[in-house]
Image (cartoon, rainbow over the protein chains, first blue to last red):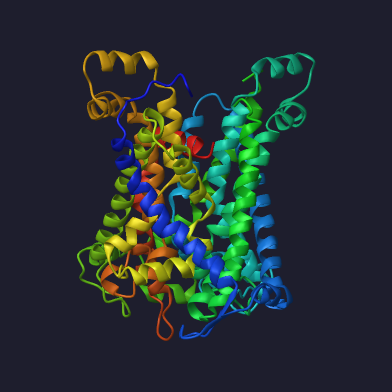
Length: 293
Length: 282
């Protein structure tokens, strides 16, 4: 850093950086501090009285079966989405990597779902899964499944998992493809001379070599399933039936904004912040052990 | 390709085509649905085009048909979404490139502290601080306004990092040559740094435009006035008919309209998009 040539001005840099800092302070640090403060308070819904209650909000959450259920729902949901989105993307990218001509064409037609808003994706798939008119619902009923996501919580869960997976495949595909293309050709050639076919080479050469990418994507997919799927859930199930698809983020919104339970919602926010912090640290650890693409 | 296996290549193509088709399937069904009367779905959703053509689209876009529960015409919602996405994009890129410039090319007290403060925002997405941020917006009187919709979202650690990373690779000689030729900090920034950052700006533009256009939770929190509804929020409102018929053909048309701008940006600027995606996560 010391070798970096710099300008001498003193006030210009402060002026340049201050808009960013101001917005960060007002819209990030202040609310975050507020959340931490509120999580130790008990407040009535009208905001008239509040008192310091220590860790009571957290203890309450710990003993709240709804919260633990929501945590469990989120884990079930995130693991399924991460698993399905990564497997399907890995399969597609493994085949795309083999193709010499036209792989750009396939890439173009596989990456666009990334640009679709979660809520819009929810709307598209809701039409397919609608129990009375949906095409997929009809197909399932033909197979003898009594498909009804408005009443059956397992069905509702599958519906949001599939929609969230659909949106995430393109992201994983791009990263897996880049990783697979960076595996040295010479390794494949040597193995091919020794007589191993494409499938075997994928399992014994490519797959182990791209494991850093797989690990990185696992973290990213978890972050996505935790925090970016609010729109999908809000459009498709509103957390229902019952509370079966109410993830942690959905619950924060529901408790704080609809239920007006501010102390509890703030405590939940604080827990989520800790989760994001851990995931971010994880992600940066990965970057430090940087692997060549 | 390492060896010649025509059959295996054919198999690869088949798998990929199947993949593309299944990913595009929901959009196909949606597109087909827009060409049918809403009553057609009662007897099973059709998989081939009906005889309405693009009339549902043209009716919606010319504001001739409205939804039974939506007071705001689609074109107005599209306009709101566009304003929001562009303000967020331009704002984010501007303040990020400025702060990255300050951090890399100047020395001032608190430089590293400022940098860490910005870094900290990575850990605080809107989703985890919903209620307190809403309260701040209320206190600042920014509910139901474009400034409330955009300004809180334009702080960005990712974009700042990306520009910083890039600025660090700018050769020292270039800086010194500019200094000798008498360029001050502003001139160096505008005449040398900005043109060099073109590809980075394009990459971040794509990512940020998608981010801005697809915002949902934030506008949902801070807009109660229909006047500020974005197209993404409009769709949710149309889906939420409590009693009465859900007008699927119009909803699907709106859904397609809502996803077109970001999808077009991604496909048209594919190279920049891939660069932005890969860079911003590393």
